[in-house]
Length: 77
Length: 77
Length: 154
Length: 154
Image (tube, rainbow over all chains, first blue to last red):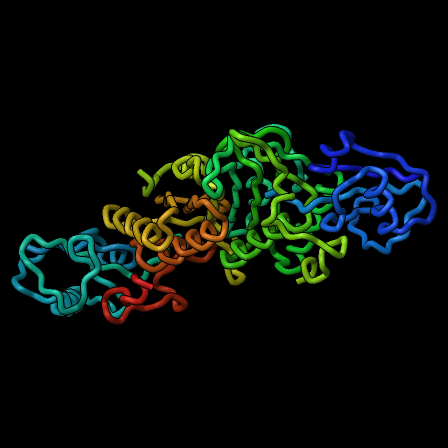
């Protein structure tokens, strides 16, 4: 099980704060592709990804129990 | 009459905060020279001068009623 | 607790107190406040949202990066979350150093890094609508999926 | 009263409050504190002395210079006079601007100008003596009798 956290526009678009998925050895890129298709999301191209609270590349392989967060361009400060 | 204000090391050296002098059409340079001689001061070369609260050159001519201040290198901030 | 998020109004003095020390001659602070007009558009209020545990980690990382570049610097950062009105404080960054040059440079480094790597987002509310600012065109996209190495290490 | 001298401890928030406004998104402050160690020598306390009316005029001049360079900037400066202990605040400079870049630049301009043209002097008291800092060798002499034009206008 992988938990995906959503923030900002993505959270508004999906109407939820997180999604749990049964996934196995997906890359971040594969997860993004699946999410884009399943939820009719606009492109996730400009969205960064964090795995377990650290930024991760698109080719990072996910494991059971990982917490993934999609991070739209940040605007704090 | 010209009033000369003293600060920092100069105030400590002369033991007073100000000096009044009868002077007429002196330049700042002449005033400095006279002060150096009269009070056995160390050189006033590194000291800036203000006349009536504005910085003034050594060739500024002083008038009766002027308030002159000798301004050692500043160290505020 | 030099790096934190706050649901309550930020007290500037409390952030400064964390970095004052006997060997610091200079403290700089940056205070980001909610500005009313941006490009001719009037903001009514803002909502700040954060991925909280990661945001705190990233603020701590910025503190560590500053320590590496300016070993004598101490840093404290508090970022507000929730609803903010005009002139409310969104962020306070305090940096102390022995000499002033470093206090300015390190403080500036901190705000630039916050805008690059800390997962906090603001939603602007105007009279005629609302929008997550990160989705506006003037923001930088990250096509590789994470910030460039040069962003992090340079 | 954005530019003043104070015989009492400076309250940072009061200086900041003078420059906060609805169109300012950024406020920077510089806080100069009394450092204990300078070049291996331990300071016990300091005395700041000012030529008060001229010092206030020169602080106001710095504010005007900033306004000329950064028309949207607002500036407030309070400088302490009298006896200060270690970590006491000697000066607070607050600058607000719509955007952060200018707030850092203008603030830094202010402290550099204070150290050039404002008639305030500090006397350091160490365990083995005391000295007016302006008389130390590391200070800049002004052989022409007044600050260079480039100091004032550049």
